[in-house]
Length: 300
Image 1 (cartoon, rainbow, N blue to C red):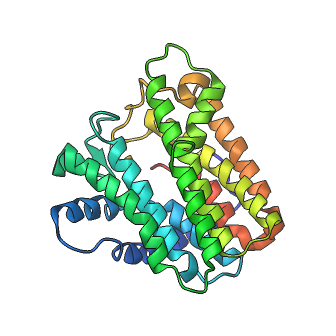
Image 2 (tube, helix red, strand yellow):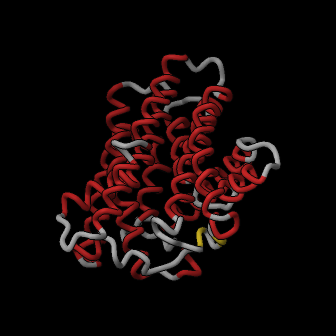
Image 3 (spheres, rainbow, N blue to C red):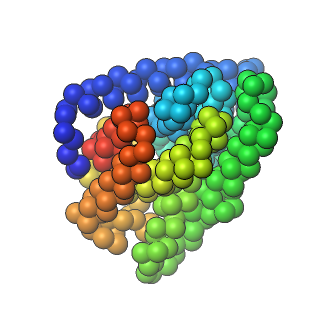
């Protein structure tokens, strides 16, 4: 994995991530109210844990740009709701047929396929209303409309769903080319990481130059993140990952097309590109830099 100059960096980063995760988890508790079985199903998956990478990236970008994190918190929560919706649906028998997620039984195992589908639908639909109702009034309506547009594009038929659909259809193909593989990973995983960074930058009034640099960072981080996930599916341990391993054997992945060593090399290339994109922010972007480095050394 990528070497870090100072192991103390990772210790600081782990504390930073832990503190941010606790902060985000407290906010996520406000996203779903009520005790109907549908709400229970939604809360079960939303509060099941996870890295909270996307909302943490949003808080970090806001800090870099000198913006009050309260301004991005509703959007950060909404993006985590959308991410959770995608996981619930990914785990369904019709798609990946997984019974374990984040070390817990998947939603459909607990609540049944039908309610799991509806819970995912509700998380997606409710996320947009949550942004509107909970974003502070000093964020302009123009910026909010732009944020909602970007999220819709990133999550929809030209974004995450496009990558997921091609991922599924590629299972039936005897041979998939490298450009198709890159398309799948860029969209099914990368687009929601990219939109988290971009929407935080938009709310934080980033300049065009800053937005372009952060977009470059996020796109490379998103691709590196999914490549590492591919690698961990081969070499990781179920107990550490909190989900099944070797479940992607029928899918097109970077290790399948490139082998493990070359896949890691490609992940490192994108990681270095992500870090290079942050140069305009200098030391202010240290946590974004460390997140990129940490990604290629993670075990889960």
